[in-house]
Length: 243
Length: 224
Image (cartoon, rainbow over all chains, first blue to last red; front, side, top):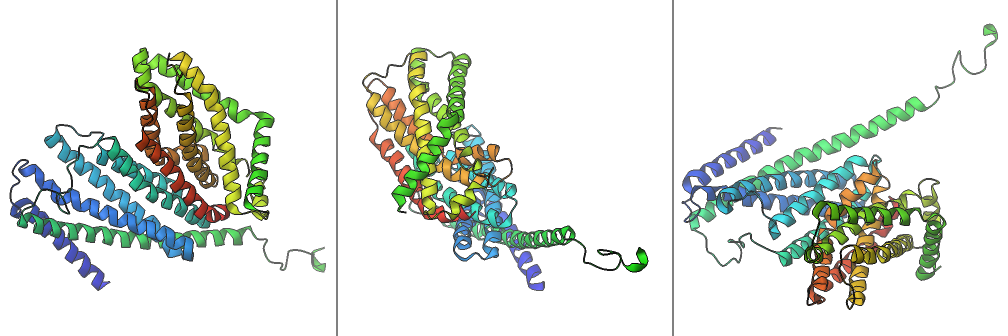
């Protein structure tokens, strides 16, 4: 418990430092000026989302292969956290898009494919919600999870063929270079946000396991209530004195 | 029983079941007709606009129709618990899935055979000269639709509100398919009437990837 508090405090400190560095330490960008600072939040959120959804995909396969319940809980937790990060990414993207592009939204390849991704994982969560039997829920949602994950590169490919407007990546292999301080601040923010994601993921995972346990107990109680009461005095064949 | 024989037997069962009542086909065709008519009321397109937006309309009608059409394939096995009987039968799990996919493909193609000429007449789009290539595109597109549709109907059959859930699962998943099918049909309907090779390859690739995935995961779908 103590280490948990210490880790949470450490991550909170990282987020605080990251936020401060993004706002005051990182140099001003040449064309977008202050608005560009949302970059230190926007891009790390996508990294966190990619990590979460990759964990979800691995957990889906894990469940189908090993049938260990914790894989299912991890799949549920990580896809939920992934959807949360995706929502944050979409919103910060819109906030960035409005002053820079002049519009909140455009049907560009990256934006469209991200929105489709969001829809796919929201429907995954909906599917989990609507399947009552825990075993069926785990298996069927794992199959859907694998299909959805396989669909992601195809969605990205199709929308890129269709059209694109979003800037190409500036960090890994992009043609533009990035300032050294900007890069340091960026990595600090990235580590902090991914750490927050993992912290939430762990909590959500524990919650899911507790929920499953509670569900099992509820089913057991219901099955006990449904059983006929054991034979005893006053039941079954009437005793002599009662006749 | 080998895979092909069992698949064919199950496919014949699906077809016999449907052609006894023809409920599904009739409802699908009428539903698509309504969409076609509504489009005309909503947008009042000129012949040029029909050629530009017609493919999108046609495919949206097929997508919505297919998402409703595939829903009973597993749901109707639940009424008399016949899915358990299918599971106990000495046939590969993929046979059951493949038979349902083939049956759905047949139903969808029959519906399209009725609807495409109607569309051509209503919207003044000439199909002369492109009919063979259009059939090719329709088959590729419909195959992708029924592969994903049948798998997702197996998933949603066990859920609450399954009729509503199936389109919610299926339509976002099929976005790339919609883009590819519409783009190919637009280039077919344009003045040059060309078959866009990139998009056709994409359609075929989509079909192959998800047919393979459903073959690999069919065992898990059967036990669900």
